[in-house]
Image 1 (tube, rainbow, N blue to C red):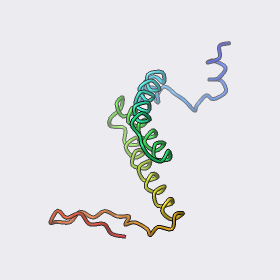
Image 2: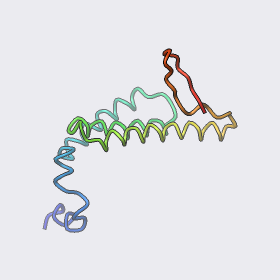
Image 3: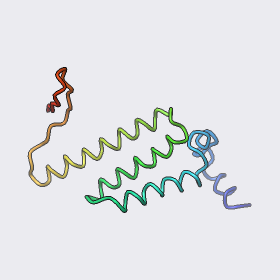
Length: 116
């Protein structure tokens, strides 16, 4: 029995053909995702925790290249962006800095306004 067959027997139901249809073959997905992550690592200058959030977003971006109308991936991107902002708030709190505004409000006169 091949390694893949043994593995599939153990985890059947966790990975299925629907995922491959939605996201493409894992070999292609991993290659494209690692290309983006390599570029991010080369250019990134900041806290590694934010780089991790960007790498997670990159993975979702690759999925969307194969299935651009897959709503869950768009939602995941928003979630990873939000967790990066949560890290900002946590870092500020640990450093004793005051909380930053958390809600963006677009006004009718095109001013940018932040509200707590």
